[in-house]
Amino acid sequence: MILAIMIGRKGSKGFPNKNIKKIFGKSVCEYPIIAAKKSKKINKIFVSTDCNNIKKITKKYQVQFIPRPKNLNTDKALGDHVFLHCAKFLQKKYGKKPGVKVGDSQRLKKQLMQGAKVSTYAKDGGYIAKKGKKVVKKRKK
Image (tube, rainbow, N blue to C red; front, side, top):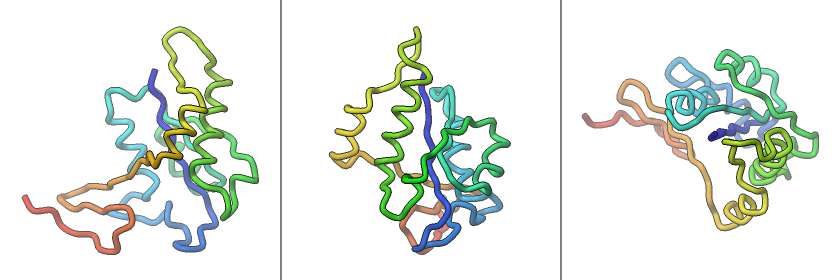
């Protein structure tokens, strides 16, 4: 079983409400979930957030929510910390049931420390919005 995790918090100071901003008619937080839903390899999708708007938006995709402790909802908390929390939560939830493989949190921690990251790309109607880019460009066909 392959599990996908999407994280997003409210209270961003650099780009307030970035996860609920609309791009091409959908909130930014919807794109990774839509991509995970379309994947034939992902079996379950989990969302870790402290934002009620993200919960409302993503609920329609039948995702499951991972409760996030308050200390992971601050400016000082890194995404790496949130992913580790999620991995530990999923290990407790699924353990070592037959057919379920949840990577151990130490291996995940090592990969995150070595710079392993997941980027999100939102694509619709020939346009592509890349994380970190200021301009949304139309793709050449």
